[in-house]
Length: 241
Image (cartoon, rainbow, N blue to C red; front, side, top):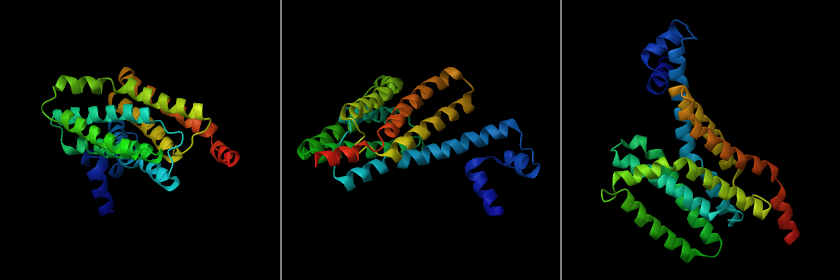
């Protein structure tokens, strides 16, 4: 019981809420319920961010293919993630405020390289790594004005929606989802829902939550497409053979 208490106090709730919920059994103490819900969602969002794109990477490496994946979508998403990382570093946030973003960035860059590599453009993929790394170092340096990174961060919602629509269009044009990873797609979908709920629980403001709802809807569109095209890729492959 002491071990459980230590874990709960370290990650889920303060001492006051532990007393209310577990000692007094006041399970409907609204402020503490809000704290527990917010922190729990935050933990799941962080864990999801660290692992969300790994299934996509593993699927591509197993299949040695990047069929139906959109490289422009990856580029747009990289702009968002890099802008977010640069903005948080520029504001001198601690590493725990941008560590998850760094994990997403590394995974997204890896996917971008693998798309080029498995399409027979390894040299282009290496050039992409060099150019992107140089730009990322520049953006996270003091040479770039904070206003620029703040502007990039502010445009993240429409840019992320555009990235999802580019991937949706690529799958639609291909007639299947190819090497798009279902676990990654559904983790993004669930993660965006958790993020929207977390913002709403924390602020109670519909206007502040709206951008996250829009992102959730765009992820939902891709998830629906994954379900609709679930078994089309194997059939197309068999036909081609």
